Image (tube, rainbow, N blue to C red):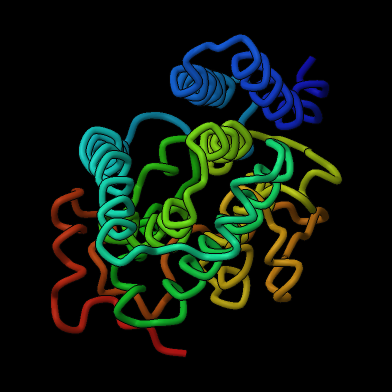
Length: 297
């Protein structure tokens, strides 16, 4: 059974969530609720399986950093994400009214059938998120925000929510807000979430998954572990959000199935000044301290 779960879990949850979403869309159900339930279900499943199918037994259990991840999750889920979810469309509408924003791409995109719209949105959003992520690794002032996400010295499901709010905002501005400006319908945006959220809920999970060829398509936990390496040459790779499409295009994809994980997880040596073992608020504030976790090439 463990062998079967290890090799089919990722594909099963992605296909299951997408199939449920398409059924809900056809049946007139509440799509936002369907996506939310699918996301929560995948997260709960990942947390449960971490106890029976761990990748690394040393990464399990409740620790001091669990409080950091829970605090970050609470801020992101309860405050930051809702503010962007409701504020983003309002700003986009204000821009349309004030500046008369309209683009040929937006005009073309919104007249296409559903599936081509969805595929286009996936490609465009992943492109924006790819560069947002990559720039957080190559620009010192952005790395100060992103260091919080890399400060964990283990990987498990809740790490997915460890983000500085300003880092989260930057990802939204490049990955989602342009789609709002293009006038992408809400059911298309939710369709993208139905594809991406299951991947994200498993991306940091401490699970011994063997996803095979899916590692060359999705940003799986096997692929994403390398991004959290303490070695810059390994960590400055695999910037993709849910897919690794643009990592292939720009030459930043890295996957080594023979090793399946870097030797150590955590911050780079040059970021040693970052208070990785401190609480959430201390890590949050340290991004604004002069000289914090300077990024040197």
